[in-house]
Amino acid sequence: MMTQNEMLEKANPRHVFDIGDLSVEEIDDLISLAESIMEKPDAYEEVAKGKKLGSLFFEPSTRTRLSFEAAMLDLGGNVLGFASSDSSSTTKGESLSDTIQVVSNYVDIIAMRHPKEGAPLAAARRCLVPIINAGDGGHNHPTQTLADLITIKERKGRLDKLTVGFCGDLTFGRTVHSLVNALCRYEGMNFAFISPPELRLPDYLKEGVLARSGHPYMETGSIEEVIPSLDILYMTRVQKERFFNEADYVRLRDTYILDLDKLHFAKRDLAILHPLPRVNEIAVEVDDDPRAAYFDQVHHGKFMRMALMMKLMGLEDPLKK
Image (cartoon, rainbow, N blue to C red; front, side):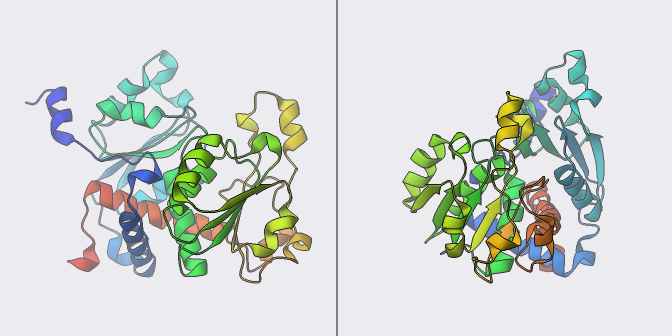
């Protein structure tokens, strides 16, 4: 019988912590697979039969957790896990690394959300199975980015030569950080970053990712200034859970509210995205506008997670046998 260390050495699983862990070609392949699953879901309903997902959410989540769990169930697999850290042995003082190593003995793949940046990476060192980062603090959220990318592709027919506006909390918005990283790898992109001074895009993205890509970008405090030129508008909420000072949150939370008056100046084929949950930043009246794409993101996200789990577990596409 192998020891745990021998099992770790043999397993050598591939993890996805950051959208940069996937090449552009791999992203395109995942989108193609997700589109195939959407087209013929019945063909994939037993692909993961006998497989188990470890759904480990140390931070509250509705959409992402249920999306992962629905994805595995729709592939014919099963789900084990918990929805908050209160349900795990970390409340007894167990280290995160020990928790992940234990769980990896029971499952075939893990989806993990954690409030601390870098936690999935640290946990992976003793993990026997692939880990997918389902969001780590204000850092990264790669599967939301995959949902964003397929939604943009479905709406615009391409992932290049687009003008994309990001509005709201750009400092702590992990979905923003991941999507900027992804889109910078496509040609002909232009970016507009709309936020109050306190919530601007972090310097590491401007001085690293954006500068390295050479794509032009601008920063502004006015959504009205840039909305006529946008192909994509990515709205985000001001995240109360990322603030240490509630007074700052209250002061900034309603800085931008997208309504039909503002959309009067936008392109007719603008696509409005939002990672959800929404608070006040998109008026409910916008939901019936054909440019609203945020519930499409939810729909697409499940299929992208199905595709990613299939790839990481090495499961064969039944339509390519």
